[in-house]
Length: 511
Image (tube, rainbow, N blue to C red; front, side, top):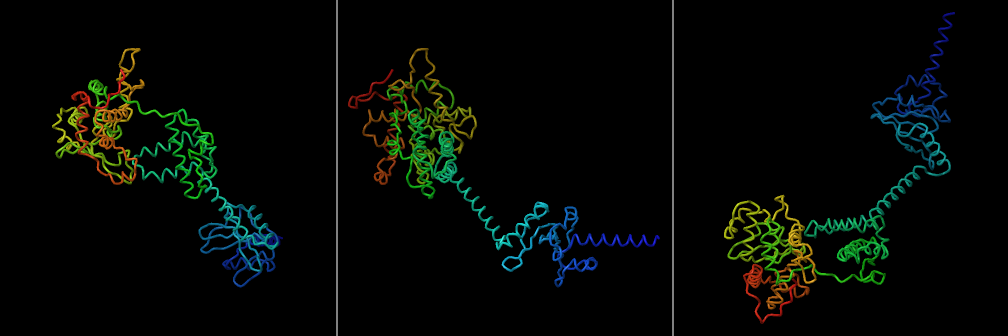
């Protein structure tokens, strides 16, 4: 009786083993020959040294998740079948990849369906069924998938290209391309700031090819009449960016930022521009005397600006190494710091320094170091100071800001009794600004030394508006400017006689 039960138990165990082996049939080399021999002959089909069971299994369902997770990598790649043409390839690295065996145009093909577990057993079965149905219908699912992948890649590329051709992207690309040709790094930040504030809120996400005159008008109109200088710069920058886009073939050559066309489209004329308020030259000696009572480097920088007739940016960036005293005192401003010069033509600008200007340098050394200095010490001090800034801010390596010089004038105008007009203003009553003293110098030359007009233009570092004449007239008239700047300094310091009667009539100065 016990013997019968033992036989039945052995038979049951043997049947379970056979069923388990039938559930997971490796498709590869016959490495488990003994297990294969135990399978019923009708459950397998041999093909040389390779074998698979899906010849007898007509539908999927042989694998389960637990069995798949239990599969271990071997020295070589092997496959197990789920039936219905769905195979799981197990690689030596441990990776498991779904394959679907198909017959396309009379040829057997293996189509990858993705890796496990990223592609679940359920999804792999569904993909295999769809692929086999497509193959039975005469289609090539492998080729169709390649076309689908290519179409998606093309769509993504087109989307990325469209995004790259928005006005924002093109504007930033234009600024980057032009930045190497700009002398001052501030120009980049100024362009970007004007775009961020005025243009990008309206045009930022718009394809650059769709920007038209109406869109440009929406950007420019809010500041065109209220802030004419900003409106003019903004329109110019828009025109440059749209021209850049047209040059790259991203839009038509028609530039909607053309000011002449915009006027016909409704852009009003800008109000008459007003020049920088300047102090009448007759009042400059009194101003310089009052300026002498101000303390600090900013008043000295303003004084140096007036005596040299240069822009504040060129003065604020001055370094001791730019001074030379071989015979005459000369300050050589590098071309890249000169507003009138382009980066491609960086010609230095020589400035003859009058004794009054040299005295300002000595006082600047005292204000910065606390050590006493005399004008005759400046050549020696310049060699000692080297690359140091002459007019630094609180940070030694950072020059004074433009607002520091403007603040000096505001303080001097604010120091007056209530109800009394500002003492330092132009003929219209507008308070003078640092840049206006260049006009004071030019009007002094025009009224008292008209024969020095050309030398005065060179002193102001103005470019010749006639390009042909400017290409040949290359002299900086330094020898003529030396006595001119000395005479101007003498006038500013109150040491010059009143203009001779033979000069042009002096304009009436404001009180």
